[in-house]
Amino acid sequence: MGGKGPCFGMRLACTLASVLCLALVACTDGAEQDEEEEVVCTPDPGPYDTRIHPLIVQRCGECHGSPPEGDAPFSLVEGYVDLVEGEEGFRKVDKALRAIQENRMPEPPAPPLTGPERDLFVAWLTCAPPPEPDSGM
Image 1: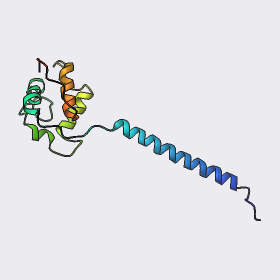
Image 2 (image 1 turned 90 degrees about the horizontal axis):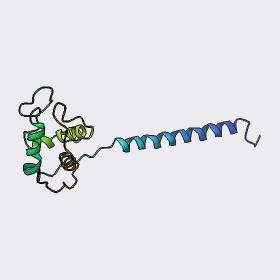
Image 3 (image 1 turned 180 degrees about the vertical axis):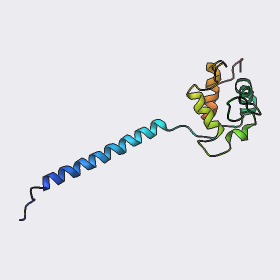
Image 4 (image 1 turned 60 degrees about the vertical axis):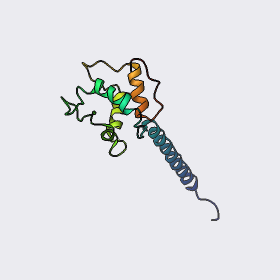
């Protein structure tokens, strides 16, 4: 019986189908990870004192002051080191970026961030070059 038995074709088809399924799952998982991937960096301390901290105090300090008020889980006004310390992805800067990008902060009745405020926060939190200072910032 030197030939390939009647089951050879079925085994080959099953093997090929399994390989294709694994390849499809691997490609799908990678695509989902890329979509969910977020920028995690340590923002530059340079503009913190002059541009970022005053804006945090003005726009976030009522709830995220020291101590935090209402349902705010933490203070954002304790200083640069307090914002960037901890495990990447779980630091205050990482949580703030997600909240701003998802339009969850500031919460009503506070007005939403203006375009320039949002641009400055997002640029700083993602380690991108900050927009040029505005007369209003």
